[in-house]
Amino acid sequence: MINDQTKINGFILSSVSLGFNTFACLISCIVFLIIIYHLYYNHVKREDKITVVLCSNIYLTILIYSSILISTNIRSILGDLYNQSFDSPWCIFSGYLALVLFCMLYWNFLNQAFYRLVRIVYSQHIWFRSLKLYVILPMIEIIILIPILLSVLIPLNGVTYLPNDYFCCPSFTNIPGVLWAAFVGYMCPLCCILFIYMYITRFIHQQGNMQTLIIKQRQSRDLLIIRRILIIVNLLLSLGMPSAVLTFMFIITGEENPLLARIAYVGISLSQMGLSVALLFSIPQLKNIIRNLRKPSTVMPFNRTVQGTMQMRTITAIQ
Image 1 (cartoon, rainbow, N blue to C red):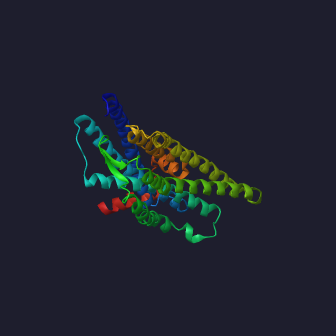
Image 2: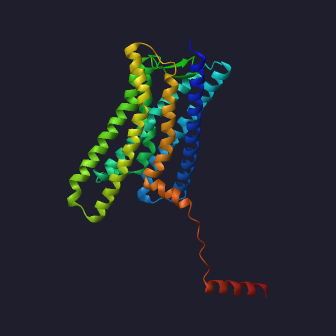
Image 3: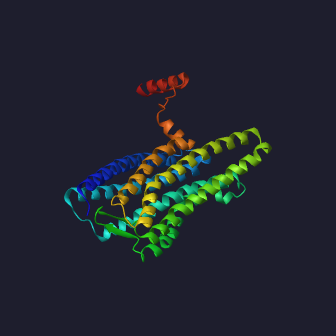
């Protein structure tokens, strides 16, 4: 039986999570629209377009995922206030959809790492540097990811309605389902990301003495960006630690923390908010796009000769 203090703590956690998700949703929506505007009007350099498209995929995923989490937080808060049940097929569907988007967020970071690997290490493979590839790659991945992820989770009832939390999500007491979802959407892409960036760093250090000054400068910039992205990846890993610790405690003791799901969602919501801001400072192409918005548009003055000619034509027309 959940006591009143636990309900108050759950309400506070859901409210904090709602604030984080709302902020992440607003920032990701604004940045995504700015990116689309610049891509549509060709305000992005040709060599930077793939990087910007990869960032737009990440921001679109954060936007949709944080919107679903906002709905989850609202249901949780309404349930705490009015003891209202939200058990329905739509709730189960939204739980699976949130899980797929959570996995796609990490796979989008893997796509970003793969592009940097191709651009730096395997630059001779032109096809892997095609803009169309990185536009359709998330669609291909989600088509492949959904059957692999759900084919195991659905028979295991991976997503269930939590009556004390008033939303649907993977139950942390369902250990096989949680481990499978963590492997497919979390550990697998995360390990690949770390391996790729370690390989790129090793390659750059090995080639350091055999490159021209311009290439060395570009490689130094790539190393700086990689360090920043690895900081973000480590942040994502650390934010999942509280729920992982509580899950292992449940495995050992057999006692589930009644606020386990809400604690996990606070960490996820904080990561969404942190990612939406951190990417702006980690990716130079995004930083330049945002910086250019602050520059006032300059109006070129008319040439006096052209202006005089226009005035003479106007006088002639009047006469």
